[in-house]
Picture 1 (tube, helix red, strand yellow):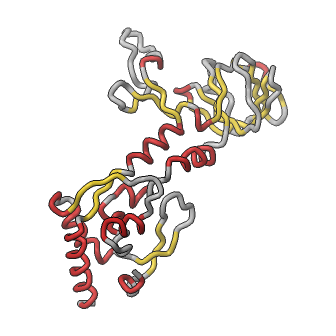
Picture 2 (cartoon, helix red, strand yellow):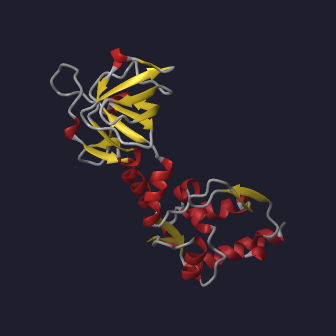
Picture 3 (cartoon, rainbow, N blue to C red):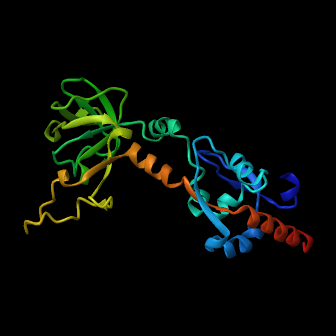
Length: 253
């Protein structure tokens, strides 16, 4: 593989769930060839990436060589932009890492209070935390706290250590952020903005969320990961042809 791309400059790529980019050969010289065949069904087939398939191991499985692992990235925009899909058992740790806070829901008015940076305290649990953000349409307050809050207790915000007793709310529910609702979908699995959907009553009131299906952060991560698993791959004979064309490009400098 090193011989295949040794003359190419290095650029940063993100593979899988990597935070830091990895130096990798810049294959932009090859884009024209791949673009010409990527949408021609005669040149590729589709398959599903299995757990623990790596780009190099999948290349070897398909072509008896690891040399063509890079074609998966060039043929599949989502893989190129989002990285290689993770094994299922890695998704929950990723969700917990990406969404580490707690989500408190309420039916109270939080439009002008419980601002990011405010400290909050539960009246029964005694739990405290710092507000990270709010989602007004979902009635959610995202709180950085190691402890749970209790459903039914009063939550009081504080500013600079002074309790704002006139701005208390009643906690409807409390859960881990990764396990809380990210958005709602309708029966067609379409994203629904519940703040914009009319109730049908003519009053302009919002619809009840019971009309829709809640999708958690973890479910969203899982669905996105699953969508990355169906990819286009070059048929073996075309892969050999692409290699030949590539070598011609190298010879032309």
